[in-house]
Figure (cartoon, rainbow, N blue to C red):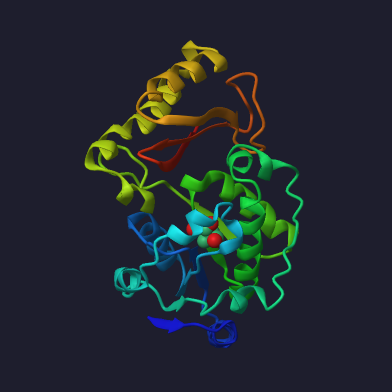
Length: 278
Ligand code: PAF
């Protein structure tokens, strides 16, 4: 694995690989890597000749300065975890390396999907995310780019983004990796006590309950029931049942785009998200 800090250098190394007709898989991350990230990298390894991973804590997608300041930076451990799976690890040496000196952000038109669910609670988050992802995708110009479906709304927005910026990169969504009790893997889980980590299993339990038993209830009924299951254990920000493509509200279970159930809440001050699609 080669560590690269300059965009120009990465570009020229990848140009060589493309001239040798190698396929390229790209996994953008913000570091603090865990088995969820490793599963994306392993998938890229299986499907592509060359694997590029980036680690960049993107300031423009944080709506709280505290969250940005406290975001774990664990480059040494991250490098060890992925060194046998990755060809090029891109770690921009500064924010200017990505955004240039002036940092002028674009405003993408995603048709409002960016203001739903997570977007409501984290204003500006998806525009910031889309800005960095568009810069990184344009730089790497990979055949495929891999994103975790735990951030389902992000995945749908990135799909739209590639169309807006006319990129040929195929966006691959990879299944959520879970702990043995069902809790979705996240770097944030490390900040929970053992007790909270066990208790937070109720999130996946209640989302699975919706999946299994939805046909016995109306959307409103089961939404209330599942929320009640979680409340008291976590502070629920939202539990919403939506259209899996548009993320808009749905009126019945036979929704032609499929059903997306999205959750966000906090326990011990740690914000957790999860979802299920069916
Ligand atoms: O999912 C993440 O880790 C980030 O949002 C991403 C896609 C790397 C952009 O900063």
